[in-house]
Length: 398
Image (cartoon, rainbow, N blue to C red; front, side, top):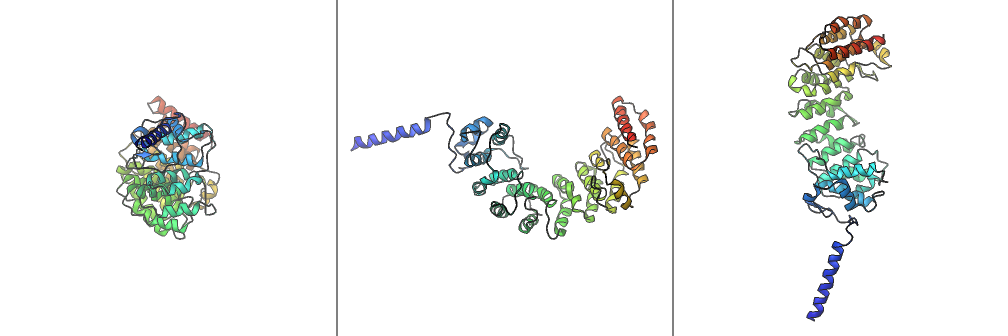
């Protein structure tokens, strides 16, 4: 009996060794559930950091020209092993590189929606968040079979990273869904900075029955203690077309300590009254706030913000029709403000260049020609060339 048992044990050991060691080039079958945080599909976290995209693909995918849904899902689940900072940014990682490589190589990839059931059942909020970011590249609505289960999972999310990524990437897909809109609104005061940041982004896509509470929430976030939240709130809030936003946006523009948010705040203000290229908005309050900013006295050479100024430095085909209705706009006032900025030699080249274009939009040929004297006095050859080229281009349009 002892010899018989020993024989059986020996057979089992040989079988085990064969299973573990045979066929080094054969990819592992990714049918095991995600394990602990430090190991996913047999890949340990410390080993993952050294893997290349090729390594990861070879381990998980048998035919890299045509991954199966299961293999594609397994690859996505390895994002659990990637490093993530406190702002929910993934460090460079083999998982992302592998997806990019498969696409670059022309592989026939599964429909990302077909991974939904497995991913939404995954215990890792990190994995689900990554999946939401992938779904952001796909349009789907309530007519899609996966719409309901994906929405249900989002509404049940409690971890900040999954909530933030759902807001950032999927608000457009669920923009008219009342339950999703209410879920977003319920997180307006979330303690996590990134949830608050991407709340503001989501609001610009949503189409709730009543936008009032959403605008109220954005107004609060325009005064948030975190500059990232402020910047994101300012970025697209002009699309909400509510004059109650003018005062908090103007407050940002008066604070040089918030200079990083000036581009976005000014962009939103200009959208509310100028709205290039559609020229379909007419907020007099936003216009006045814009002019106050252009007339401001700033210590920084980079203010007023050149990117923000660029939003009123071009005109579209509907400009004349818009101008006929926008009776609050004073072209002379705009030209004078832009001229004063341009004549300030302490201002950065990009700021001064935008002012030439603004004068081209709202002024006449004489207004542009009056800039030549200032250009002639510019000492820097490269700056002078830049200004002259811009002036010549604007004069050619007259």
